[in-house]
Length: 235
Image (cartoon, rainbow, N blue to C red; front, side, top):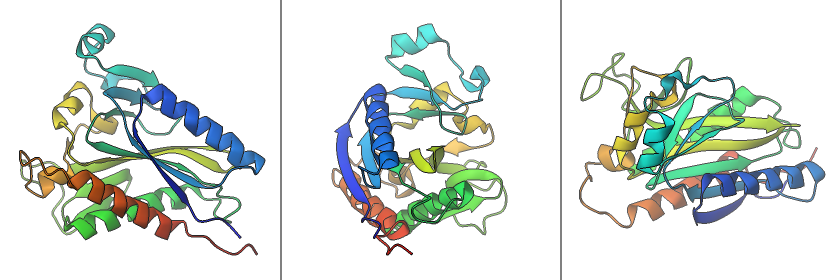
């Protein structure tokens, strides 16, 4: 029997500390001493860039990042450059795809998207995915290309994963009530045609200080991920 997905809320954690926890969880899963996990947390301001990506989509230099108190890390996930900060829910998924007989990274990415869309639907936010672009966008899928309040697609969640011996790590970042100005330092995910949005913005709650929003989103994300990766009997 594959165990139920274990969900841990870690609060605010520096990026390097969260990466160390991920790697320990990955090695435990590979060794058969750990279980599938979802690590939920927030990061202090940090910019990360995926393997193989260049710094051309980083719009400010290291000196300016230091002045702003923003860390920078090159990491082993897929994807380009992204920003993490308070008010963004980060989910790191440590899942043994081989044990679940799901050795398909593309399927894994689609399941993350489906989980996030389920959360947004529960909150009353229409969303869609776009062919050729991993992640989730706000707005109905029937919107014409590029349609948004300012003429650009609104990206609300970014996804980038890594895999070792079919055990996944890294995951997704869902903008809840994050200060979107932090994304001005980058070309998000290398997509210069998008703008970043958040749950707070899409619900029209900006400036209202809805203190229960983050907890509601966390609960919904936990539920949606447990539905995508349930306990199942071994064959």
